[in-house]
Length: 139
Image (tube, rainbow, N blue to C red):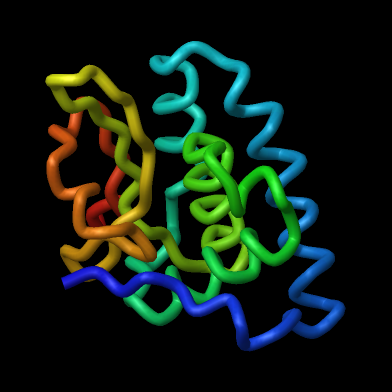
């Protein structure tokens, strides 16, 4: 079962906030690309990263939502990309996912770690995955 974030814990330390801001800016640029390009870029970036744990992904998501009011709101694509990029900066990789649901039609993007959606409400389980970039398999 996914954990919903508790943002009442306060702001992360300065070093973590700076990295989160960098990830948010990069995610904003990446989110402007077509989906196939986003997947291609993420597939390159995931190389040599170890799979993220739930706690690592949850901490990254909390850092992103504390650094950006847009990511804390409804901008799920930018939030999921920023969370993924921040995890990568820290040497780990969550599974990045994007999907849809019907009816009514809605699209959503999120991250998973250890088989769980990170920081998502229970209704997020209604989305069917269309695109995913899991951690790379060790060679």
